[in-house]
Length: 316
Image (cartoon, rainbow, N blue to C red; front, side, top):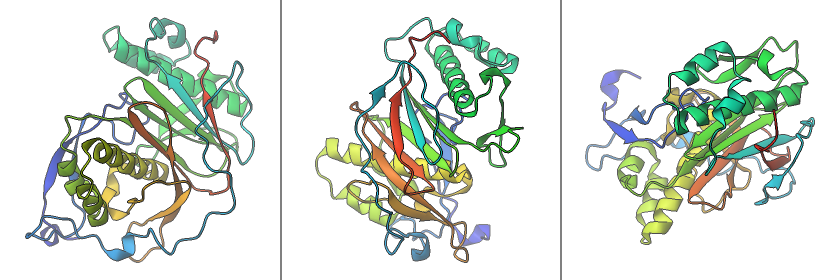
């Protein structure tokens, strides 16, 4: 699209903290977003082509069990089965002294990166998150975690190299004291988590990033607590889809609509242009039992999702 055909209206949005270089599509605390479609100067709302807002008339998910709210504690890592999605939850609240335990599993480059942080929470979270990802990938593939070569793909999404035909899809989300890691042998996956930040002007962020339906639904909510929870549900759903898709900032959050009260494997299609059919993902809300929202997006509607706590107390 020609630059003159859109109004280059941008907003520096306060984005919820992601672990530095820990596989987040949006890696910075502040992100500049540009609207992808023509803007009506009268109301400053993004006009999204109807062809890109495909919440209706999409394939119905096949029969499946609803997403469970139960997170299971395990002492040993179970194998990743064919057709299964494992969703691991790492709770770091109140933990200390983990950096030295997990840093040994990192590559020299990763250790160097971790050492650039001051000793403390950020350094510890980076080391634990990267090491746990390596442990889980190694378990799923039957390989030494330290031998895995994690590289950035075309649009920056992390991927594994030199697997000799063994495929695996993975995605990581981090916010505050929570890390989520999703794994699957087949099919793209994306996951996101955000803690509620009541200092954020959510309607201003919504105006720059959401569809008109989503903006209107938020504006109609009078209870401020319900409004902020709804905003973060919308945001995490969108982030999960874009992270599964892999294009990150190249795609627009306003190019698809997720303005439903709750989602359980709901079909959402994202397209690069009006001419292509695009990719179809199935989006589900996740329950964490804390002041945060989370969502997962899957390429397949019938893969069961196993929700597990990562056993941090084990010796690795």
